[in-house]
Image (cartoon, rainbow, N blue to C red; front, side):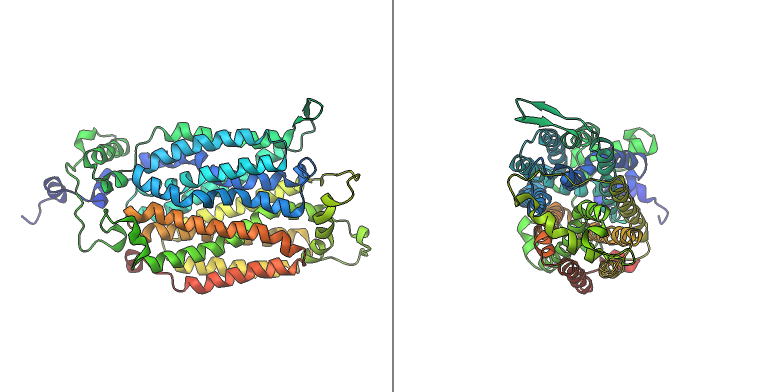
Length: 513
């Protein structure tokens, strides 16, 4: 009697999600899914980073002031915020798969069309629309991919996707490096329509999303979502498919015959009642959790995305800085902040000077692209490393380490006197803060049950994107007051995150490990 197999018992009674996914196994199916996710996961980084890279090249074509560059950096996030709650609700009610398939298709088309923009406000419109669309697919993708794993593997999936998203910054920069420096232009109707390399670059940025739609259309709906909707037979078919692909055995040999909503008393808080109403997220015990993670995410995205999106422009300023033009001697090594203080004011007012003056685009040195690639590569490998480190430490410790290193980097950067040191500090600051915002998403996934997971992730990302908007709009304003102001402001937000992280709850299973 004592030696009756668990498999026999599983066949006799309905199994919950954890038992079903464990029986289906982890292997080929999950690896293929991660590969299919890659092109689509680049969408978020491409949508937010492509305009940042073309700012120096498009300055004269679009007649942009320094503040307008901040608006263009922020507008994609404004679009994301305006649709965040809507997409979160739709994903939990209609399913994750339909949201990201239609979303990525629409975003790809929107990116292609943005390359034909002939004015600043036309480009602002397309980037707003792109942000409005992509908010849903991103949150749905995080929830969707996590729900093909058991509890142990689920915690690392947002970080792995974060690695892929960050790798999208490398793809964006490499595409810009290949396309933008080209010297050609198509001019029609006496200059009413102009198509040049930076516009072609924006159009090409839509291709990964379209490729992602084709790849992801081959995969089924999340079985965890299907179970939460009471569609047990559909969920069972998905589990059988996963089992067949992972094991190579016929789907009929899948050991579980029935699925149920039965939740063991010993199951942890993350997998509670699948039928929780959406409004439960605004009541105890979920309200304190959601408030904590959204404020932390606000600070993380404020710091990370502000400096990341302004980095190409700042590096262009550093590369074009000539000390002799400012009566500086060869013996004097200007610091990072001194260079920005001397250079930012002319840039901020150059476009509103004499109407007869000739606008000259900033020369984008090749080193700006190589440095941007280095920053993106460093950030990608930090995220990859963090996904493995989480096997041994909890989210709270990882966040405190990353925030601690980031605040040291941003403070030291004020007095950096050479380009290599500035590059190392920039890479570290952006890399570690980017790791924190993905770690917060990973924590959110395991702190909320399935019925609330997509809307929780959407809330966290929506409030975080408000930080990105505020940061990019305020950065050029504060920079007019001097370099020290925006840098210390970033340090203060990181310090706030360090304090709040101390109150972040540790999931029970993680704590036991």
